[in-house]
Length: 390
Image (cartoon, rainbow, N blue to C red; front, side, top):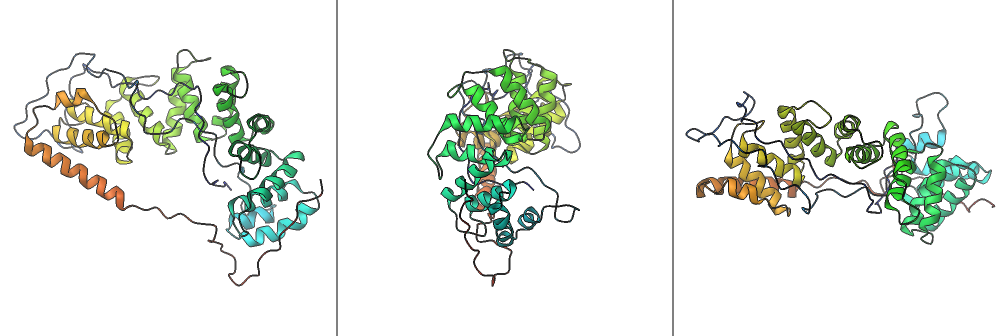
């Protein structure tokens, strides 16, 4: 069972986030496939471009996604309620029976059970089944962490970073992340790595950070997979390895990590650490563009403007360029390349861009709140448990 923790504390780290390798230029435009629109009738084929056509690099341009942050779920998945030997407290939590989970955790926590203490901390922190009380959550996490619970240590560290329910203390947070990381808690491994790269709390240690990220990536932490791939892509990073970088970037992209989708597409387009595959690059960049990533939209516009991976289509190119530009990502190269586009074609492209923006504005994802308790609504309010004796 993986908990989705509310909110995240952004912390810029020293990982060299590559905003995007550039699609190699100079390749002749490919013929459109049956699945993609052919060039508009009467449109001349694009003039072959010099190899530097896709410069300048993305340096200085805004990135559409945040840099690595100290955040994420902390509770490691536990056996489901249907499996033999499943913990009844966590099974109740997994089913959404927050009140039942709380009631069952109280006597166990009072008897010194660290896992039950962690559950009480989680319920108080999220407000599931009980009123949200950050101070009580931090105290239960502390008691569980003192008894060696790695999940509680990671959760308490995140509260210390935020100053939620407890005084902010980054050094103590780092120590707790390290403690949990040594027990292979995936989020703690990732967060400790970010702090080792940031260097604001402890001396920078890129080699150790890379080792932590590698372990977290192997344990399935998607944030770590993306950060590790980015680190391995940096030629100045310890153990730089473009092939391994491509492997982990693909893992993160397949898991739906937005920034990784763009990077993986660019790796395929440039043949960085993987065989060059323009058609697959088009698929990934188109996917990221549809999801609203400004860099993905910009790179997709360039593909349409040159016919790489798709039929040459200046109207589509202008549409995606306009969408990226509205997000703050300008591109003088595209403006120049498409300067001969007719006024009618521009209007068509901008109308299509407006339709995409309008559709996105109408999508309002449902977010379950603390009140979404699946227990019997007639059940009495749970008795509040005092923290166990120290």
